[in-house]
Image (tube, rainbow, N blue to C red; front, top):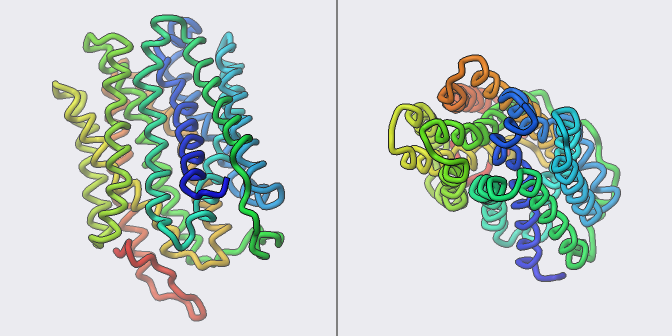
Length: 401
C-alpha cells in the first residue's frame, strides 16, 4: 500500500477500534453489574485498567517499535487489543475481567503511540495537521459507536455477545492491516540508530509534566462523562439502549468538533484563552446535566466545548520540546496521561457507590475540567520564564499563547 490516504484510512480504523475496546465496559456496565455482581467502583476500575499498561509501556514502546518496525508494532497492538476483549467476553467475574482489560490496554498503548508516528511518517511536510486532526477524531467515533450500539445488543442478546462483537471487529481490522499495510520502503538513518532513553532538559521536564497532568485529567473527564451519563439517564426512566445512545451524542459531537477546533486554533491564535474558556464551558455542561432536562443539549455541549482544550493540550509538548528531547518528552507526556487515566475513573465509580447519587460522578467530571485551568496557566507561566543559555524554544506558530 503506497497511497498515503489509504494508509490513513487503515490507521483511522485502528484508532476507531481502540475507542470501541476502551468503551466496551462502560457500554455494557448495567449488565456486568447485574450478571457478575460488580460494583460501580469495580466498573470504574475496569475502565481505568485499560490505560494502566501505558504508564509502563509508553516510553519503552517507542523504542521497541524502532527495533521491530511499524507494521509489526501495529499488528502486535491490535492482536493484544483483540485478545483482551475476547477474554473479557468469557470472564466469569472481576478478576479475569481485570486481566483481560490489562491485556487490551497493553495493545491499546502500542496502538496509540504507533498510529500517530506512522501518520507523521506518511504525511510529514504534506497536510500533516489535517491527517492528525482526522485521526484524532476517530477515537471518539469508536466511543460513540460503543455507547450507541452495545447496550441494545446486550439487551437483545447478552453482554457476552456484545463484547464478543467488539473482539470480532478487532480481528477484522487486524486482518486488514496484515493484508494491506506495509512500512515505508525506506527509512532515515536516524530511525535505525538506537535512541537515547533519557534526553531532556530540566525546563522541558517541568513543562511536559504539567502538560501531561492536564492531558491526563482531560482524557479521564472525557471518558467519565459518557460512562456515567448512562446510569443517570437510566435512573430518569430511559432504557439501557436509549441511555447509551443518548450518552453517545457527546462523542458524536466531538468527532466533528475536534478536527474543526484544530483548524480554527491553527488560525485564531490566543490559545491560552481558548483552552481556559473550553475547559470552563465543558465543566458547565457537566455541572448542569444532573440538574436540567432535557439532557441532550448539555450532552452535545460537552462534545463541542471539550474540543479546543483537547487539541490545544495535545499541542503543548511540541511547543517546548527540542528535536532531540521529543522522544523522551512525549514518552513522559503519555506516561502521565496513562497514570491519570487509569486511576481517575475508579474515583468516579467510588463516588457513585458511596453517595448512591448518579449525579456525583458527572460532577466529578466537571471538577476535573475545572482543574485543567490552573494547570494551563501554570504551563504558560513556566513557559514564559527565561530560557537557559544554549536552549532554543521550539514553539508551534499556529498554537501561540
